[in-house]
Structures are given as structure tokens and as C-alpha cells.
Length: 108
Image (cartoon, rainbow, N blue to C red; front, side, top):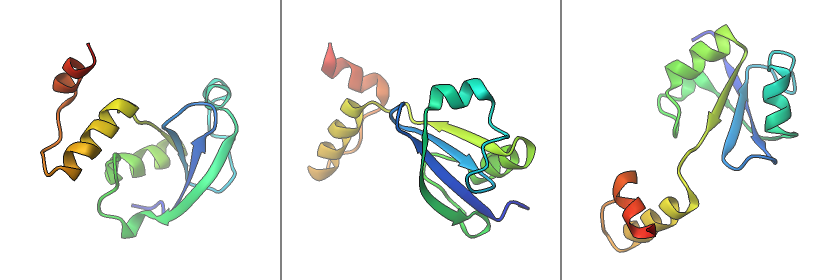
């Protein structure tokens, strides 16, 4: 992995949308339409990719390849607030998390 540091931004416009860059505050590699839809990026963290073997919701190899190829990586978490809250409560009760298909039955 030749990308050493990764800079992470969250969208203030789109919930659960994150933009990973290989250079801090350099958005020239991000397509204009994507950046317009993302809104004003808010810097949230930096990390060394070579020191992270596992990342939440992102495969480090996929991330490294995207950063090397395009200079950015867009992550949009699709888990809804209801799914997250239900599974948090299930974890608190010592129950296993539910899959997306099972969760939808609770809200119909």
C-alpha cells in the first residue's frame, strides 16, 4: 500500500456519507457533481492506512486501490437509524443482531 495517510471527511449534507482523501483538503480529484451532492466536507480524522489491518465498513485493500487510482473514496453507510438502534438494543440485551431482511418486518 503506497498511500500512507488517509484523511476522512463527513458530509454535512448527506447523513452517513464519508469522503476519504490521500491529501488533506485537496478536493481537485473529486468530481464536481459528487462534491456538490456531498456538500461542504467537514474534516473528522486522519489515519495511517499501513497500520490499519481492518477498518469499520471499508476493506483496506479496496480503499488503498481507490485512493491510488482516483485519489478519493466515497463511503455511504446504508444502515438506517432504525436498524442501528434496534441492533444496539439487541446487543444490550445480549441478543444477536438482526439482518436487514428481518428488521424490515418490525417496521411494516
